Length: 382
Ligand code: V47
Ligand code: SF4
Image (cartoon, rainbow, N blue to C red):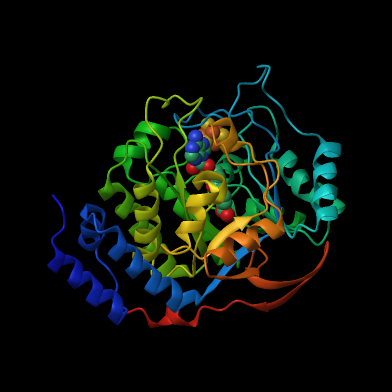
């Protein structure tokens, strides 16, 4: 049933007063077809937190192996050991990528991959070490909570030790992958074998306790319903209230091609923009909301800058996970293209590093400037 205008007015009053939205408010927003009002409210919060700025970074992805013990229904990236498509990068390949990234002026390497049934934990530590040997100043954002859970299993060591060994090798922060949908009605169905919701949250909590920052994602547009999405956001909001360690929330649009869920159509433009906006409204304690252009498509990502998003992610080179699943976006955008998209959307482009320090740049040479603070976050009334 569509949401009546009085209900949206109630939500508007809460948003304008900086009051926290409830589970029911989130559902009412999803039930509404008034995309303009939802977008306007999200934009209000977006501008309260991040003004007219839109952030991007210069980064590259490394997926060290696609061999994975799990078989998540939505995944088109994984392979079995011995299959033709299966690969595992060696030291020279990893270092080659890091050197190339350094030469292009990248500030970040985003490293995630499969859970290989034969590789020891030391391999994953070495990947981080190889990158730092080849390009010491690059920030390593590595491994999802699902991978950390796997490392804990194969190494039979506490999470703090696992994270500690990776920190010693040069780990800088954690990406937000592996979250999918937390609600068991969906998680059990699409990826029940891998790290549970509780474990995902525990990994991020532990990382935050060690002083690391991390991101969080949500995979939407498949079998989940609005109540599962809102539940997902509220679980993240609760952890963020306790730790404050999350930087950015990234709603990930499901890409069906080559997956075991290829009978499901891609999420629509309305779904993409609603989810972006509702994320901004529900996650009142997250400083940033990212429109990951690789999966949203460049055009939707640009429009999302008016629907709650303040970040476009990066130049991204060598993206595999989405392209295996049918993403038609290019493998990379250059800095000039990203800045033009942002300016055309009426925003001010700001290059940031992974930890949201402004980047000063001359060609491939760069150095971090001041931290991008979001003081308005403190004003949320819970
Ligand atoms: O966890 C896998 C998703 C994630 C598909 O932290 C799919 O800055 C859609 O987490 N269709 C990995 N999604 C990517 C990720 C990420 C991306 C960009 C930035 C950051 C960040 C993190 O990709 C997986 C899963 O949720 N995924 N297959 C698919 N067919
Ligand atoms: Fe493996 Fe990750 Fe793909 Fe699941 S999403 S099958 S854990 S690579």
